[in-house]
Length: 399
Ligand SMILES: *Cc1c(COP(=O)(O)O)cnc(C)c1O
Image (cartoon, rainbow, N blue to C red; front, side, top):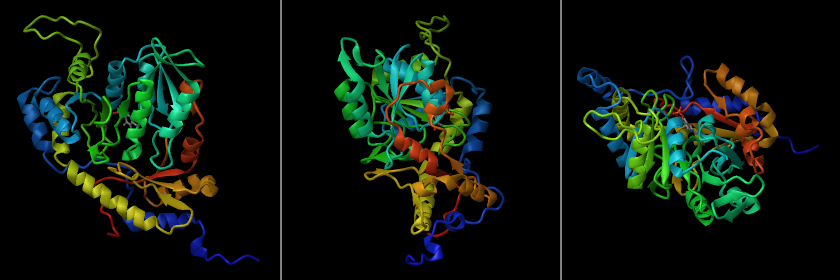
């Protein structure tokens, strides 16, 4: 006979549902995983935009949105584009990714990161994730490069595939910043450019600096489920003026400025963000500080509610960072990974729009043959992670 375990000390799906209720309240209907909040100048700006007739690819809201983004992120230049995937595609092009290259990426990410690599004719090369940040593990990155990379006349190549390693793309998962200093140092050692997938992390900080300003190039998303939305939209951030100019050029059909002539000097993209969407974005960015405060209150409430719940850990912002807590996440202990779907079902049955992590990229048929290092941490996170409702509109209950 062992020591009797009190009922409350054991893993129980009901205690998880109860903890979510303590933090987020009892839902009236279905509480979405993430829904937008339109509580500012959205309608006023949209009306102004429509009345101006400039609803399409040029207009003052695009310029203003870009200026506001540069100010918010501390980046020298922000270029608004049609979505985050397009922003990543343009970033990879600007970083010099070419057909036949490899780009080092986490396997635990949204499909956009990996698709954008493929749009360049390049192949992803997956490295493991960190349990602390849920993003690219700097140590795993360093170890993988030590194992397969070699320097040559045309840059760093993968000894096993013979392909050039053209970029590294860390992603700040659910808003939690990765260890950028470590990743940038490793990238510098191997002379590989870094493109930051900051799609989920607008408003997060790393060592006091806004996320998105660490690498030479970063991509943001303003999809409907992100912290700030333009309906659909994205942006390229850079501190390099020449790259900023090139980013604008290649995302606006590479047209040479002229009063009337249509001359284009390379194959560019029509990735422009319409003025209508930018108008929405300006109104949304004005509210970013309020969204952040509300989301961080909710995260603190989840953290408190899950303290002492057996078999579950709340995913806290990594040390030295502040997360925008775009999506709150809990991790079941490995022993209870088999009950993840039971927890998901119980939460959804109780009106909480909880979701599992993305299916890891190397499991998808398009990327199953891509090169990869050991992915055991990413695989463990995939088995155990559950995202919880995280909208800025949710009033934290146990403040
Ligand atoms: C949202 C997101 C993107 C961009 O997605 P779009 O829908 O194209 O704006 C890119 N990467 C990650 C990790 C994302 O979550």
